[in-house]
Amino acid sequence: MSCPLNRNSDHAVGEENLCNHEAGMLYGEYLMLDKILSAQRLLSQENSDPVHDEHLFIVTHQAYELWFKQIIFELDSIRAIFSEVLEETQTLEILKRLNRIVLILKVLVDQVMILETMTPLDFMDFRNYLRPASGFQSLQFRLLENKLGVKVQNRVKYNTNYMKVFGHDKKALKALNMSETQPPLSELVEKWLERAPGLGPGEFDFWKKFQEAVEQLLDEQREIAENEKSEAVKKYLLNDVRKREEVYESIFTREIHDALMMRGERRFSHKALQGAILITLYRDEPRFSQPHQILNLLMDIDSLITKWRYNHVLMVQRMIGSSQFGTGGSSGYHYLRSTLSDRYKVFVDLFNLSTFLIPRAYIPRLSTSIKRQLCLWQNGDDSSDGEKFDKNV
Ligand code: HEM
Image (cartoon, rainbow, N blue to C red; front, side, top):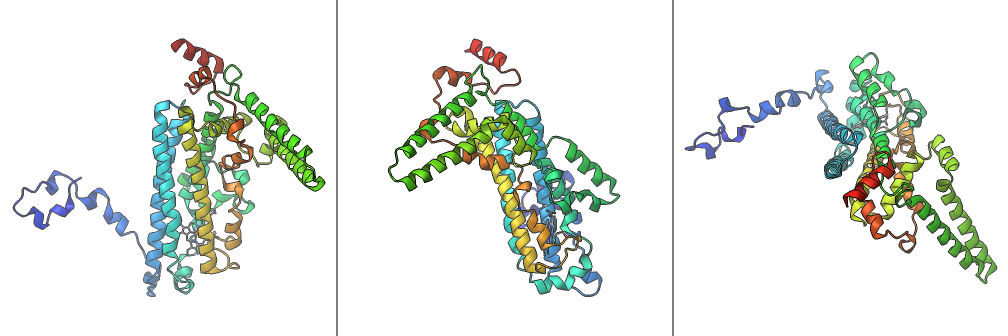
């Protein structure tokens, strides 16, 4: 890109003009600023009733849409990497891009504050002009939700038919349909977790060992409770152990896990959940450290989107109160508040992992040979890959 600043600047005097216009593009041309900077059409002004804050309202929304575009761009590239068998060398690139999404989302969460410098009275001055336009019609926001893994059946009732607002816009409908049918990030991560090394019976057989460790932990806690002299404390402690048993049963008994999945309370398959617990417990092992960082970033994405939803709801309440309908036709504040639930978190299982963790002292030890076996992220047939690795050692 040519340097536009050089053309008329003092620095250029007497120097060879390396930023010759003919030699390349100018800053404004490259960034198509003529388009972007002339895209702020103030409806209040067109109606001969200019309202100062409408400019901020438009620029803020446009900035959001540009960042949504960048997030989708990163997300698509991450999904493409995940959709192949993930090579170890690609994890760093995934981490870099996920981290970028997280940083952008942090900016988006904070950006709400700038718009909040507009008062409800200021907003009222031009709100009528923008009807029926609403963020509800943000195509990119819906694509983002779908590509992450928000499922139609998990959307709140008012929003299950979210495509309706796009009417006959064929391009938008095609993009939305594709985003619903192509595997979202959540599904690709699920498949990746299912392949975590160490899960197969021919290898470390983590799940069996983890179950034994949990049983040992609960047995010891039960024994402590039984030996308690005070009847009240004993009752309390035994009750606590029973509750812990129930919690673990929900992961060790496949049928309970599947029932929770059917109810939408759990999203990952049984095998993927095992992979996630394995990675979380052994995150200090070099083999699992980057996968563990990936899991953390995925949770960050979920939390930041929830934080954005929350900040947006608060702003909406401040601007239009809790009883006015939105320009998009929803109940406004009440509809938006209902989207704050876990139904919209795509990696909710990762948040809940902490329920199943056990103290470090109980985590099954990895022998040297198992550590060596763990060096390959398995693809498909566990045993054959394990053998292949052994031969190479
Ligand atoms: C004065 C500021 C704002 C007000 C009063 C406001 C109001 C609303 C309301 C009432 C809705 C519910 C749908 C409806 O009936 O219209 C909504 C949805 C939405 N708004 Fe805003 N909004 C504001 C700023 C923004 C900004 C800056 C963005 C950034 C892109 C945004 C993005 C969205 C999105 C994506 C939805 C759909 C959310 C969902 O369905 O989960 N809004 N907004």
